[in-house]
Length: 497
Image 1 (cartoon, rainbow, N blue to C red):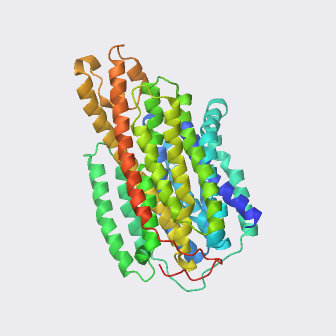
Image 2: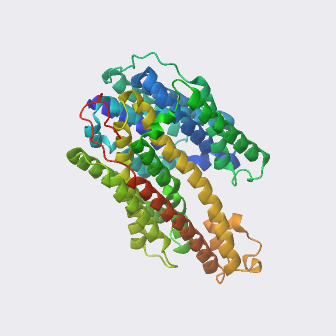
Image 3: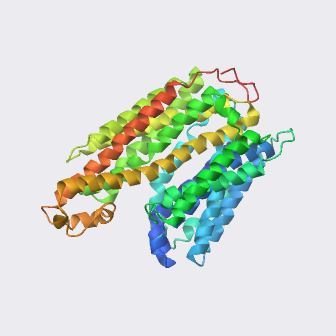
């Protein structure tokens, strides 16, 4: 692959990765500066919603109109919306800019793998499997430090404004070195299907993202959003059957490799954020460590993903065999959650790191294979759509998993609190005060704090037990992935599967 194109892809992937991680650390200062501290979640909800629903649309557009045009458009949208975010004069304007960033980010994430597929044969794609996990690993380390430092010592607006030169550089690299590759067939875009997809998944993602947090699950806005999303989803599926050239061709689901690999990545996505969301908080509550030390518990996960994905990709290039890796990866993933679910009342860090590392190794073993296997199983005319399907399956799993985990955790925490402490001991403090505020727990009486901390630990390990089952389901799905010969050239017809 041309080094300029590779540099452009890395820079483009770094834009949403660093931006998201940096904003996560600086969000309270950003919202507080604009006078909307209690509405900070909208900076992430709007972004996530736009990103999830646009991924499959970009995948189809890349197949129809050419990857270079769609990729450059995505980077341009992200860069321009970063300028709007950096100049935002009010909180609503910033939220709109974040939604626009999600629109651009969806294209960047979906098109990066498809661009590689336009330039590299399936047999050689494992050499570039390190791009996404390595970029996100580096971003997870540097982003929070970078964002916190800018917000505290300079100005939070530079989190967004610094995207401009890097976005421009990415466009320059790719535009000059990536040849246009346009499908010569005259194929129309399924506008009705795309609109239904946006409405259906937009409604469902909105309900799942803010339900139980910004709004109660019974709030009319959540009920209406979920209902509209569900009804429109049925209409979308029917439209895909009727359309001559659908946004998400359901015929691809009949391909065994696509079906099994998408299911595997969905189940991994479903539970992949459990450790990230709950492990650091649990260590702060149970072990009494600071936020920085607790955050280091995720280090083995991120390092494991980067290292194992690189090694796995290179082994697949040498051997041509991809089927064993998602199986081994799913087993390691489930084992990681088993280790974390067995944490006692005084967890040692080496046990935590062991479980965290197994999660990362498991995800890293599978990540280069899912995309490679799915792309290899379809004609090149569908490579953008199938790449987007892989990302869409993972993102959908993550959205559903995070929402379900939050609700389940609150339920289990309430159960364990009722069992271990009395309302009088809590002094009127409920689950909502305890679940996410370490200081509230530390201010409890000395006789009560250990009991509440133990209830917190038990609730988190209950969540990790669910994570085991997510790993088991991914393992069962991975066993159904057939091994096909990896094609040596880009345009070969895939083997029968």
